[in-house]
Amino acid sequence: MRDEQEDKMSPASWQRPPILAFGLAALLIVVGTISFFHSNGLKTLQSNWLNIFKPAFSLNLIYDNTFIPMDGSSQKYIDVIIKNKKGQLLDGQETTATIIKGAIDITTDPHPPADISKRFIASGPLQSGYIIINFNFKGVSQTLTLEAFDPTPPATPAISAPKTDTTFPTATPIISGQASIGSKVEIYIDDKFNTIAETDESGLFNITLEQAISRGKHRLYIKSLNKYGIYSYPSSQIYINIDTPNPEIDLGNIRLRPNLVKAGEVFYIFIPASADTTAVTIILENTNWLLKDKNQSSIFSGAIRAPKIPGLYRLSAIITNSGNDNILAENIISLTVK
Image (cartoon, rainbow, N blue to C red; front, side, top):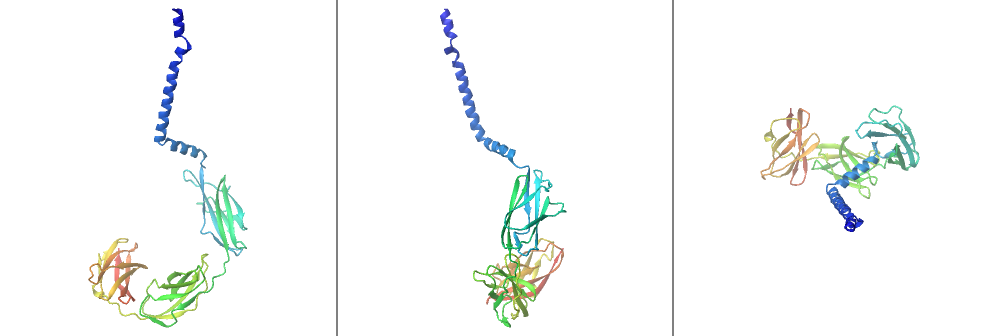
């Protein structure tokens, strides 16, 4: 009897319950792990872990562009904005600027604006090339690359067509010429900017005037502009004559709906035209609105958004005929915006 009791108390008999307990615990761990992944627990853990090492502030640089003239005197402001996680502006006096590549003078503004953390002033270098500057605040840094360029104006552009005193039957003639490769060309009519064109890989340009001009004699010249914002000297000026036919629209029956328009709201315009008219474009405050002849009845109509400032406005129109000539009809109707 005693031997039987001892057998019941032997290690083989009391080891089985712990084994079952361990198995049950392992099963719970597996189930819990699966539930953890399915409930985006890993993302939450990663997010919390990264937040531990995330800086308590952000650092940003504010500047107008990445070009600076190679003249030794020009200055460029580089503003540092440092904010904490609540979006509050921090004092950036500890911010440093280190030149990694190139040569340039950098100083600080002792009295920067109140809405920035610190202001650096870069003075024009004496050599062309790229300048790399690293800005650092308490281990967080931003790098800025500036290009020092030669501020000499680009070559003076030339108009190749039209020849001076050419007469056009359209209010939007084609202008062509040559300028520095990679530059843009601004076209001026009677000293007013009209159109901008881009040169091709050979420096040539060919473009139709974007803004229609009235009948009569006009003075035309061009200027080129490089990527650094430096203008050339104006080209030699020429004169052109615009001799368009009378616009074939029924001025007496042009209609606006409604007649009084609220600022910024849409109104509708209806313009009867001749059968020879293929397109009508309204000009309002230097914005063009193309009308459509929806019913093929030679009545061109469309929706136009009124200016945001109340007042009296004059509308003009560009009438295009079957010969593809554009005719400018100025001040065809008044618009009252309230």
